Length: 199
Image (cartoon, rainbow, N blue to C red):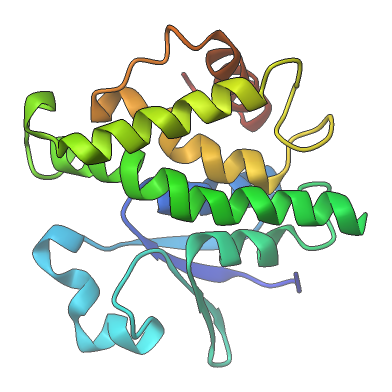
């Protein structure tokens, strides 16, 4: 990405926002975090909608009318030219494969179950059963794919790991138990250590 500071509008409890924080901090990028309380409708104000008309966090303003939303799109942009996004075309495509899977088969289930408990104050028993089933399947898929692997793509951390880490490491807050998934638990610990995140 080009040099220069940017403004990140987000919710510090949101995994989609934390992804951007993890990547930006690792890359030592200059940014300002503006807190947006989605539960108070702050992502629906005219000022915020000018940055992201979809009314979702995170949203990033790079200045000069250049704004970007969708957490994984932001990750790709920030990681351009760094080790977080492989230069090899096939390895890059494998990273994108994981990013697409995260938004389609992981985030709608793991993250939403957590939202129901953390934001809405529901108990684990009050989560949507079908969503819990799909979340467990997503975590099981990661457990299998991480067998014999250090990271999701190649031998070093990429934005595929950062994207999946954000909600996976917080899965317990959504009522999920990672302790029976040793490959996944070890991967979470490796990612946290690499990113300098306290467990």
